[in-house]
Length: 488
Image (cartoon, rainbow, N blue to C red; front, side, top):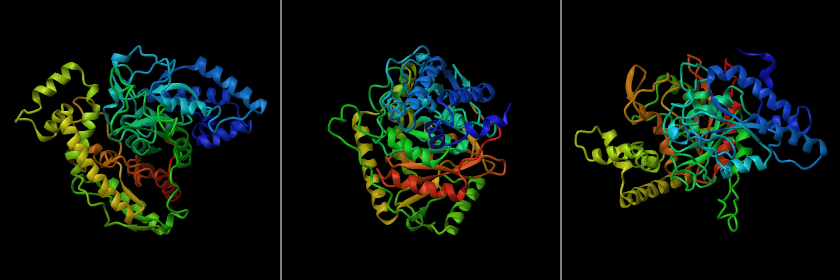
């Protein structure tokens, strides 16, 4: 399946690839052909890329090479062939959100985030797999089937941006654009061994998000668009390209992110909340996270392993997940909605199902009261970040798990350390950070005994995305970062 001659280029960083095109070491057409070759070799087993648009991509690559040869100014992503998560509207390319309701949907315009990377020179040649309406921690749907994990095809690469993380990990694209409402960039980065950044809420325009049949016009609460790449440096460049005001605000608003809190990551005050009885991590993940903290301490970082914000992880069940469930409720079919309304006050429901049904059928008054609780929690987090600069915490309580399709997010179970746990525990650590709008960068820090990658969340204060990215580069340097998986 593999071809060693294809490996170094396909798994290079986007920054390096753009430099090679700019210096004419390679051409955009050659790089596109290279990625198409890798897709042909690897994707039949992986099933990460589900739609291709090669004729238009080749025309764009030829034009990009002509522009390079002419010496005209070019953007930072000039000539880079990329794929985009199928939940993001992409002009002229089938964009389905993983749902049969949009099986024939070809947008007439790009989501603003796609426009941003195209304006910087990127060339979209395909779309990547996801669950229906981005609503799962796996990447499968009835139209396109199941995406495997590049480290073990019998396991998931995560979700909902699972096709995106698998494509980046296996070297099928220069980088990817994903979405994240409950961890859909961060969990796939963790499971597939790549880098991902969940921006501060509101930092990146999210119009064009296909999370229900009429989706794309409004911005969803909690949700963000974010990049996946093989290096943190790529994430930093990509964030600078996609971040900015929405189109209607751009006449007056400008973006100026604060710089990292220090140019020396070893001088930052780092807290490490690496486990919690409310959502304990399994022994393998815990060992790797503690080892990463040890390595960072050994490299000179000051880490307080007893510090944590004055919040309970229970907050994610009481406030975070209800807000996320409310934000995702437009994706329910009419029949599902009617059933949830009917059962919302069923006294026989287990607490998790009751929360899900009630949150999906909230009155606006109830949503506003939950938002007040969120704003109170945001103040607690802001106070914590006056005493600390960065927080390290788990992405998920386990590494990549075997495919499991029957049931749903709130009805399945998963086994870790020999114990059966609610499947929804998988999104506890990511939702805890996301529902309060904080930025989080994920970088790989090690491997389980079964050879599965494990990442860590690096969390910063609201709108201090460059701070988490800067510390993530330090973590990447010390702990190794992205490694090429066997399939690649």
